[in-house]
Every structure is written in structure tokens, then in C-alpha cells.
Image 1: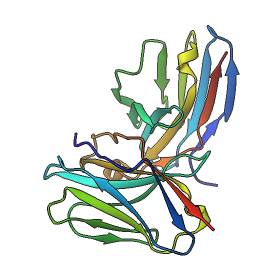
Image 2 (image 1 turned 45 degrees about the horizontal axis):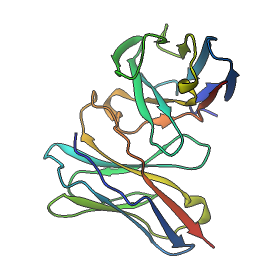
Image 3 (image 1 turned 90 degrees about the vertical axis):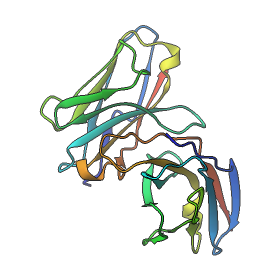
Image 4 (image 1 turned 180 degrees about the vertical axis):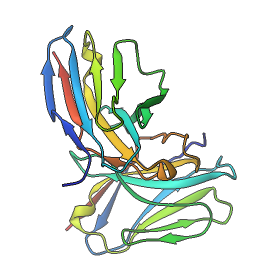
Length: 114
Length: 111
């Protein structure tokens, strides 16, 4: 399967704990995006990378959130000191730079903070 | 960014054409119309996009009105697997513009 993969698919954590999610994009895609989605809403943009450079971060991305794409391949999204409001589906997508409108999404990581 | 308005939900009979409307009355000249869909428990999937001409691909057709203030996504022969939330998004073509998502239309295909 050469699509976008995410790990883990589900994560349950207690408030105050740190969590890290991983995304493996389609190999030839140089753009990688992170989104958050809550029930009944469309995805909300969080951040994106062009190769290893993080080019934009949404105001939604508080200081507790950090994302990396160290070698321009896979990416990680870390949430520190989780809060119940962080409970959501975290989606990763990738695209080619000249086709950023055509994003390929992974299955998402569902985070539940108790 | 131009705002889009879509119905919250729609039903369609299996085998019939599903016509999903989208209103984008404030669209500007450099903004394209994009459609994605999200099947339950999956990530969104790109369907089609267009500027002003009608577009067709293997998944769907996109009809944009002459004044570009609205568009319709057409699934010509809907199947049960087309049950999903359909998102209409308006944004410029450039690489650094983000996709801004609304709540979409929940399309239910009935047998």
C-alpha cells in the first residue's frame, strides 16, 4: 500500500500526559499537512511542511503542539500536557507542491483524553 | 477567502444521479472550486476541481454557473459506497493557500 499511513490509529491518554503521532506520506510528495477534526466538522488546518521546512502554523496550534519532519520524509506531531479539549481526530495529508489542492489523506489518529 | 454554503444533508436513491449544490456567491476571479468527500472513518478524498468551465473525471462532474456564484457536483450513478460527507471548498490555485473546510453535506444513498 503506497498511501499515507498514520500511527497509532487510536490513542487514549490521561489529561496532562504527552502524546506523539506519526505520519508517513506518499514517498514522492514534498508537502505534508496536519489537520484536526472534531465530530460533525470539517478538518481544521494545523500546520504544513515543504520537505523538512515547516512553512506555516495555524493560530490553533498552541505552544503545547509541536511538529517535525526531520528528513523530509515522515512527520511527527507531539502534544504536551494534553487537555480534554485536545480529543479529536488528527489527520495527516501529503501532496506534490504544484498540486497542493489534491491532498491525499491518511486514516487519522483518534485521540481521546480522559 | 470566499465562504461556501452547502445543505446539511441529502438523500439519493441508488442508481440515480446525485446532485450536490454549493453556493459561493463571494467567489473572486482567482478562486477555484474544489470538491472532496469523506467516507465514514476514513480521511477525505479529492474528487474534482474547476474554475469556470464544466469538468468531468472518472468520479464525478462539476457544473459551475456562468456567474460562478454556485456549482453542482454530480455523481452520475450513485452507489451505496458514495455515502459520505461532501465538502465544497473555494480557494486560489497557488501552492501556499490552505484548504478551508466547512461542515459539508452528508449524502446518504438509499437502496
